[in-house]
Each structure stands twice: as C-alpha cells, then as structure tokens.
Image: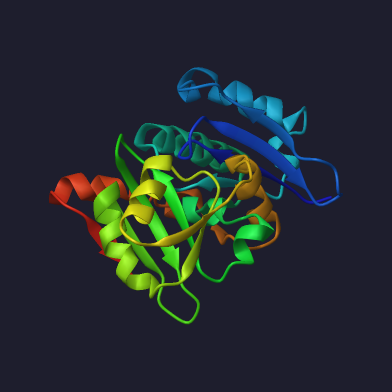
Length: 226
C-alpha cells in the first residue's frame, strides 16, 4: 500500500487527508474557520486514523498562494513532521490543487483563482497553445490583465473562485464558464497529486512557499508572470 498525507492551510479552512492507492476513500479532517494553529495537529492525527507517520510514503503540503497565515502554519506542520519521520515532502501549488479534478483538466482554456485578502486574489490562466499567465492584484486589475490574453475564447473557471473575481472577469469582457462543482477538499487534491507522482518530493529544507499576493502589496500594484 502506498499512502500520502496531504496538508493545506492556504485554500480556506485548514485541512488534512490521507490518500491511499488501494481504492479506499480518503480519510479527511477539515477545520471550521481559522483554527489551524489550535486544532491543526489534531486534524492531522484524525486524518491519519492511527496510521503511523513512518508508514507513509510521504507528506504533501499546499505551498500557496492563498492565506498567508494558514500557509505558514501548514508549512510549519508539514516540514516538522516530514523531518521528524524522515519522509519526503512534496509541495503542491494552490493552482494545481484547484485544477486537480478531471473536469478542470479537460478544459484546455481555464483559470484557477486563489483568494487572498479582501478584494485581492491571484489567478493562473492556461490557454491552449499559449503561455501560462499568473497575475496577482485586485479583482479589476486581474481582469484587465487577463482579458487580453484570452483572445475571445470561453474560459473555464475552476471551482472555488471568489465570486467577486469571476464577476470582474465577466464585466471586463471575458466569456467564462463557471464550474458548478463543489471545490475538492484541498488536502485531498494535494495528497492525490503526490500519490500520482505529479508533485516533486524532496527535502523539507528545500521547500519554498509562494506568497503570491504579498508581492502585490510590497510593490504597490499588480504583479504578473508567465
């Protein structure tokens, strides 16, 4: 049996999940609100369900962007546990976690939007045959930067996108198809990607966070990258 523990604090409430390759349903433990620091270790223990850490193939953690505080707490837990149990640690982008479901990946033109502070987000736009564009900033700035990249295409918006950001895209002329699905529990998506070998694993010391929208405030405006 192969099994990975997934941990996330960047995409909303803190979540932990153990995913195995034996077709059993993932064991999931999710927090309620901002309780990562108070209940995070208990939720991780609940997700393990008595399975010792050393029996796992590795630990995977969301590396952002997203909630600054939640991200730092989840990274702290993941690095400490991986180091203590001598396990490989895989980092999974929040964008990849949002695109983990098959329906999202089936759309060659798609956008994953990660909520940050109030009115601010980071978005990754994937267009078939073109570069991937990442933009962080307020909703209107994101929309202005990305609309020009779509070329009039209909773009699929992955589940979990903040409503204000989606509205801004539409108001600026982007044709969007919004996912009607409930967002997958981030920790489940993260562990599943690691189990499938779609997230590189290595030393806990080498893992770095993507604070995304932090750069927006540090530089005083929107940021973008290809």
